[in-house]
Structures are given as C-alpha cells and as structure tokens.
Amino acid sequence: MLFWKEDKDLVVCRFCGKDRYHQNHGKGKKRPKQRMFYMPITERLKRLYQLEETAAQMRWHAEHESPEGEMHHPFDGAAWKHFNKVYPDFTEESRNIYLGLATDGFNPVGMSGEAHSVWPVIVTLYNLPPGMCMKREYFFLLVLVPGPKHSKNSIDIYLQPLIEELQSLWSHGAET
Image (cartoon, rainbow, N blue to C red; front, side, top):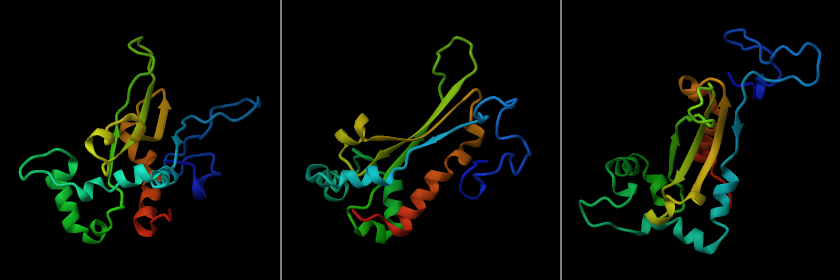
C-alpha cells in the first residue's frame, strides 16, 4: 500500500500488517522499506501551451490527415478512432491531450548479479507530430520505483497518484 493521503501517518500496512520502516534501534531518521517518486504531470502539460510554437504543434493530431489505409501516427489507428467515437466531447476540443503510458523495469547495476531494480513510468504525448512525439524532451518521467525487488506485480499501487491526477484532469481540466 502507499502511505499517502489519509494513510500517511500509518507505520504498518493496513492489509498485511508489515512495518513501514526498517528497524532503527533508536539511531537517526526512520528509513522506509520501500520508496517511490512521483512527479506530477499537470504543470508540465500546461507549459506546452505557454510557447506559441509548441501550442500549435499540440493540435497537430486534429489538423493532420493521413491517406486512407496508411498509418503514420497513433491517431491513424483503430484504437484512437474508437476512443473518439466513445468520447466525442473530448474529441471536439483539439487542445485536449492524448497520452501513451509505458513502463518496464531494469537493473541499473547491469548484469553483476546484484538483485536491484528500477521501474520508471513514462508518458508520451500523442498530440504532437511523429517527429516530435518520440523525442526525449517530450517523454515525461512520472513515477520511479527503486528497490531490491521488482514491482511489476504491484505496479497498480504505485500508479495511484498518477491515476488520481489524470482523473482530476479528465473531470475538471486545468486552466492554462
């Protein structure tokens, strides 16, 4: 579980009863057994609309048409077209943002046999043209889960802050 919001002051897990912190034996600060880092996305998305050049590119997906039957960008795909049929109100505003989410763990110390992993969660902006949406500066690192054990079985727990922020953006939007 995440120790945040109403659970931020708990010292044991509500589900399994395990301690939140390593045994400290009275020395210094408490050291959590597991950590994650979350970097909110809303302000970064708002910055894309502060520059005229980037703001114009954020509408590319709505203003561009590919030849029938050809796929040059995710907006040419069946999933994008289905989404637009299901949520026509979202589609009407060309400044609404389409995102792709990716994650995969890796061992930062290589093949040394040491058991350690890092799980980044990265979001890509699909509003941008193909030459821009796959550039590093438009990949947003949102969640980073370091630890001695892989987190793939509980990645949904680590995504809770991101899901909450995206739900808020979906329901209320953000003034820019």
